[in-house]
Picture 1 (cartoon, rainbow, N blue to C red):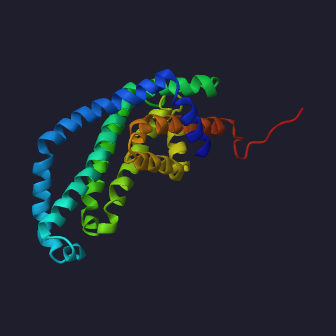
Picture 2 (cartoon, rainbow, N blue to C red; picture 1 turned 180 degrees about the vertical axis):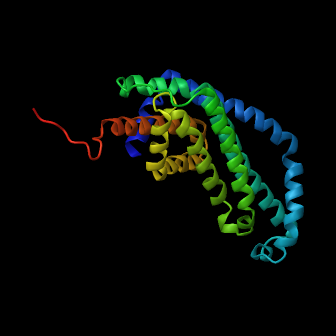
Picture 3 (cartoon, one colour; picture 1 turned 90 degrees about the horizontal axis):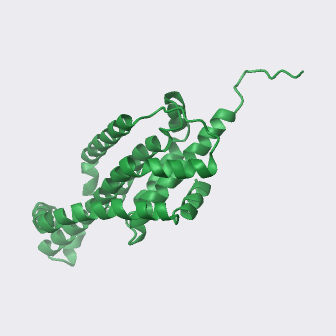
Length: 246
């Protein structure tokens, strides 16, 4: 993971990668920024109204009025929701329009001899993204009771976004090179590391300025990590197969 992230940082300054860093995030910011300008205050007031009764018995009421505490929490929740939505939208745009170029960039420089077995497709990538979005909604609904515990507020969206990140990026990273069986084996064997990379992207998304570049940097890391694992998988000796020496 560390080696792949370092590789991604070094390659992120290639002119083509720099452009991919900028435009998907700008498009996402324009779209969701417009939505925020129109609905932010109304959404904050609606959330604050529903939170006010709960805050009456909260420790926050010791130093803040009920209305002030509810308004503060409402805006904080909207920020926690807004950042993952912006990053995820940029990630989906990048998956459709940028990942093929990123895969070609990494493969040509680090894995030129790796055979391309076309285990994935554009349609498969779209379907994978749809399933990831549905999974995010399901995880969001299932985690609703946990939002009543203030210490978990910052962690819940990060954990959910980490899962979505790895679901989206892992498929696009090896769809060109691995066959279907290899993809399943790679995802199963490297589940923890892939979630770790997805978690890194989820955390970086909240860092000002850095969050703009995070999808491409972590996307490059996913590609490098999984192509290296695929190369190792193909060159590993088959268990139980004897080697004849003449």
